[in-house]
Length: 212
Image 1 (cartoon, rainbow, N blue to C red):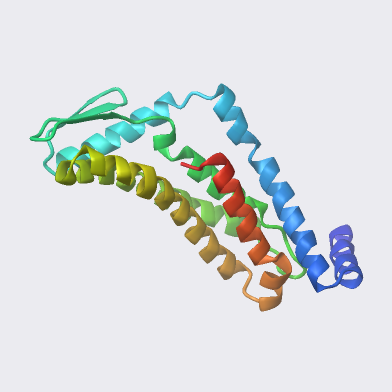
Image 2 (tube, rainbow, N blue to C red):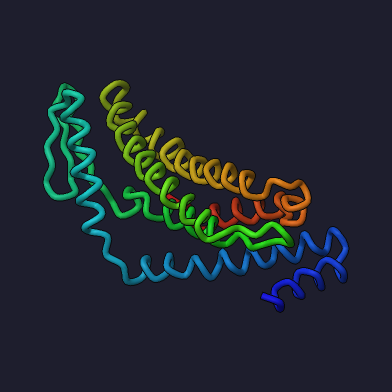
């Protein structure tokens, strides 16, 4: 504990305002990269079959509840209507990258000076945020079906390529931003974190990995 306090004091005493922003941005980036290691592990060795089945089952339940003649075969869904539509829930369609991304963002934010974020606050953010992201993912899958049924396959693909991909990323960033502002209330805390720098880092990372 004394070493942490000494470290924060040393940083405040030795570094000017801009240097502190760069330092804390660097710490955030390093933590974010370390926490992103599971992403590469899952991409290489992972099997999300169970998660695909769960998402497909819940999507099928929602569709049938709304009156659509939908049926499910493992993670493939078929809507038998005037505009038949068959699609499958891929690994990316489960929203796992977005949930992992949110987890990494929450855990990567460092303690800055007196702005210490308790682990319990991070846990609460995850307990609230991840279910919201899960629901958001189900809604975007449902949205593709609704667009296809109303406007045809071409419109559904446009929705998939743009709204589908960007929507969940925007939801993750909004949830993180709200949590960040709630836990770094003092203006100095936000400034020292170099919030503008971190937003740029996050957006660049999202473009690189195409979070789904």
